[in-house]
Image (cartoon, rainbow, N blue to C red; front, side, top):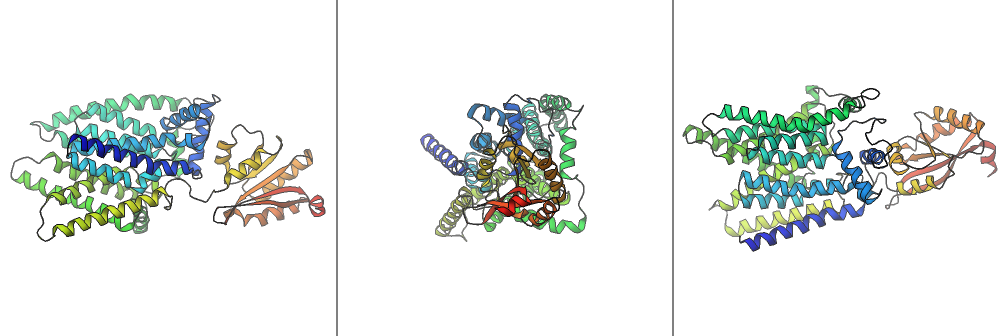
Length: 509
């Protein structure tokens, strides 16, 4: 490939990556609950009301939250600005993946790896989100690239940035250390070189980790550490009962099936990655027996494949929640391994496979990848942000903002959304855990300020609770009056708005 052809290919991939990710970004799908929560934290910073997040309960490290706050401060408070940092991380991950694959193997593998990641629905749908995972993934790939190049301090620095993005960055430590070990194993005194590399990586990580810990310590007088808080909100971590491992493996398998949109296509990519690891292990063993020294590429085959397998095994036996975003860090590594396998298959002559059959197979694979990318771009996969459960929330927010400043809004599942969207709105928002508690609060408010409007907003899955609320209000001489139903584009109901009124007034209507 000539230099001009390489430039043209790079330009085409950049355009494709931006377009495939830009469409769902501009489609502005409803926020996931966690996105709304991160947006609220970012608004506290951007508004200057709590720039160090000392007054709220935080279960994430600060880096991504501050990046989101900078975006909101620069481009305004809207969903596009909220998700812009994720878009940047997703696109930068493509460049980092190219650099990793080129350093580990060669330029053709790097181009193919980037093409696979460009078309991965997982990568497409997570880029335009406010999750912390795109940044975690970016820093882990950069850390792997630095480690493979012997830049131990840079690898530690990138690993520290991964941890500063999300606690799961700690899971990248085995990858960084094994790549450092693979890189120095050809030296006459590998353990001495590895010791130096380990120390440099530890120092680089500390450069980031220490300021993060200091930032976290500022809230310890009245708030728990984000490490403790994350375990509390998560419900704790431990080893799952062995009887649950098969079920958890099936659930994680269902998430893995979405990695490339189509289960068969995802299985092909994962199977190809495993085959590359097995082939690399066999060649590594053969080269060691021949005392010729294993090639770095074969060591990388084993390290990357073992890390992917170990990552999946860990998430199966440990009680991690089975959430799709936890698999995002594997996407670039699987693409690199799969590209390595495909590139090897292209260059190996196979008399049993005629050239025409090979071209047909490549064409079918390319069409399947393009189709899968289309599934991601059009939001037809349950990956990333919300894709319909909270559709119509904008109408709910508009209705609340139109109410008098002293209005009361009772909610149960919309607290994080209201924190973000109604950050500066004067209406009072009250969370309720039972219909009887809601009725008691509503009765007391009606007694003290009879003219004060009170609203109840129920999501579609909360509709059965309306009967309990109605019964509890009736016992207090109040009535629950339905005022509006908000529907999704497909016609299904998403939210119901109710007004709390004196029973006599409600019956007179």
